[in-house]
Image 1 (cartoon, helix red, strand yellow):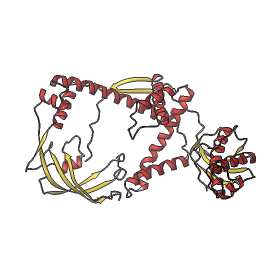
Image 2 (image 1 turned 180 degrees about the vertical axis):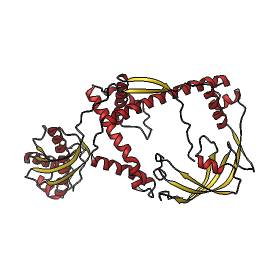
Image 3 (image 1 turned 180 degrees about the horizontal axis):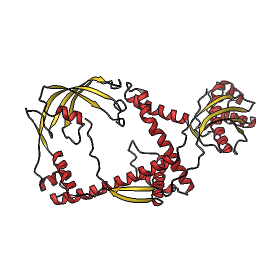
Length: 438
């Protein structure tokens, strides 16, 4: 099987599109195999242009560059010329065949049955999966619930506790650990139910003991321990744990207490407001106002994210599109390789089991959002994409390309359309406390 850069535009100049022949020779689910034939005159034109290009740089004894006879140039660079012509013609012919047949490929095409010699037509087959041809339905008139959280004075009091806690200093104490302390522990894995956790030693872990935010098993084990004491603690991780090695796993650890640190809290006054704001806020009252506005903004942002999640879930649920198997396999292979590039001990099957449902949902949403945009005439002007691209720092390594920017803007515009055509009711809610994972 030959791999060629099919997404590379041909470097050979043409005055017209090739009069190639293309047909679908095989259909299987979303997979298509096409047969392509490029006429001999196109092959000859490509050869002539490529030989002329080589002639300009050819080093042939007795001739200056650009003056050697064409037949001598062709004999000396036979294989290089043939490869260049092939790599230029096949991508161009493939793209033209897709246009003729109105096909949109997914993933990387596989080439086979390539027949290529000077003086004969170029023929090849390409197999690939196509974008599903399904009409998206059930996306207008969604019934949504906006979960609203009203910021209270108690919330601000609690936030100030956290601010004060963050500004605290610590002193080492020689007593059993209490809630509110910071402890330093060494942990060792003893047992791993799913045999996924390859690291055995976890030295110097710093854990803040908060009942609401620390894993319950870990909090219960560490509170009351003294320096030098060891204790076993078993932690059962949920299925949605972000680390694939821990998701759905149960691990038994041995913990040794190394240090117990008691926090020294600063006074809750104007000086604290100045300290935590870098002298930008003068009084504690002003700090409360700033915190209220920030919390209200974050509450509204969270409500909007939740609405988008509801819309996404409803649209995907109404359109259970069959995901092309090859495309899904290619995506999961890429995800697995990314994890294994960071840690070769990560089990591929664990990564695939965790990410396949997410990949399926993501494909279905991307497909539906794209189809909704086309059906409802939702578009993003090039000028808008260019404006975002120009505003992005060039030094940023995470700077997205224009295609990514376009899709992000289009996706948000689709969300806006869905929301404007939905029925929305509001209800108050209390957010779940965040759990700290040491």
